Image (tube, rainbow, N blue to C red):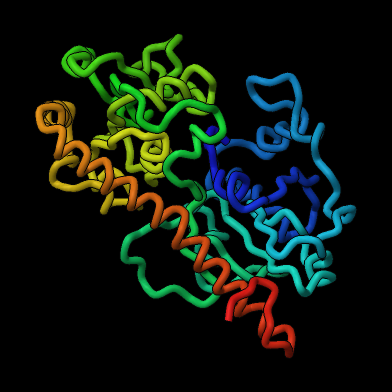
Length: 337
């Protein structure tokens, strides 16, 4: 999905990852909203991923298993994207907590899930990572898709979190809007990288799919860049790229108006709404190492709290509440009172 996703579930939570066969039950057909409601492509286009993933010579079917063949009782919590396990199966495992993301926050099922939990499920993971979220319904968890913490890149791929950093990594939506003069000005801070497909001019080819940040060459550039730039781009983004960059060790420079979540990540010292303002902020930070370390520490602590510690704690607490409503025992499966 061009995203690194909830990596912390795998690195620190001992999660098992499965690709499941797509079933025909209505609750397992939410992926069709991207074609029927959002009109982002045809059903045939999205279905084709079963046979071939763009850029690869195989599809999801190579790895997919039937949900009916899995012993779900061995899991305390199952998290799926767009509901992958039908209710006829989930009801057979009452001690397992069933949670789900709706991949696209613009989809009708996302709005419905904020009002009530969908069939066969217990908890809706709402993608958000706001410092001061509104009061949520009991079934909703403020749980970012980028469930990440600072340093996971280096745990998996080696290296140190704070090498000698140089250069600038630019968010895709920002990069496609920058003019050649902007890029020339920003070269003052070292090499410039972005997920824009480098074989084409982003200004002319805005519909060209962008590259995956996790691709080995881009990943190395990200974890060695000093700054990550996310100023106002062609559209407002959710903010997950900012989380990923901070987790990789960068200091993020951007606009709170450009992101839906994580607006508190940017302070006066790191807020910039244009390339010119970004240059001014970075020049000041480079000339004041104490301020740079202060802002770096602040952003890292926020990401660790908003995108790792708090969402996992809330998930376990709400899962324990659901579990207690199902069993008479006061001892739940998660070790929480």
